[in-house]
Length: 257
Image (tube, rainbow, N blue to C red):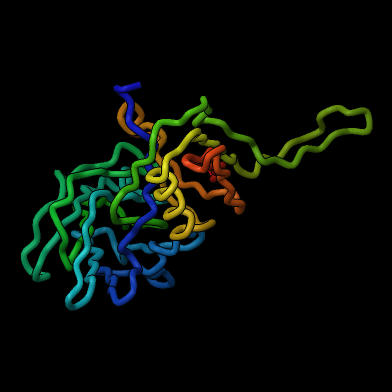
């Protein structure tokens, strides 16, 4: 178990924070850069054309600064567009430095890029270079990751269910199916959780609620397994006898890409 990474939630995001400004170097009509931080899969930002570099710039506002140690994106075409992805930071909005070595994603699936925080800065800039088609993003999150713990009980990170309309004949024979989408499910359990772990879970629940967020069940050996998911609406983590620990159960669902 020591070679594995603990379960991580990526829900804290500076994008859309009070007093901040988010701007794109170009935007295709009927899309908006503000769409990338509402955690919805039904609207997006798209650049006005393929020619870059494309910038999405974040300004925390006068007197404000933010720490960041991850970038997460879901619903994008970066691999198809051959986009070189980088994240940059600045104290003056003029001179920028890279937060990590730029890379081209291996696929158009959701991804998380972790890195060591360079410190708190007012300006952050998401850069896409070398694009062959207009890039787009449905959801992005940028902030500080939350590391939880190892799960106490086994679970299947690839559990899924096909949501389909199934037609049967009067005799019970399969007459046709229409698959709508595939839903991913994951139930994580932490037994005898101490106050520190419960505090992280409660902060996530209070701050993120029923919204989508990014989760990695083991990003050391399975870095490609980054899922956009949402919790069930019930939050219940009973105290154990004596009140020093809790049993925590988190049930998550999300659409499989």
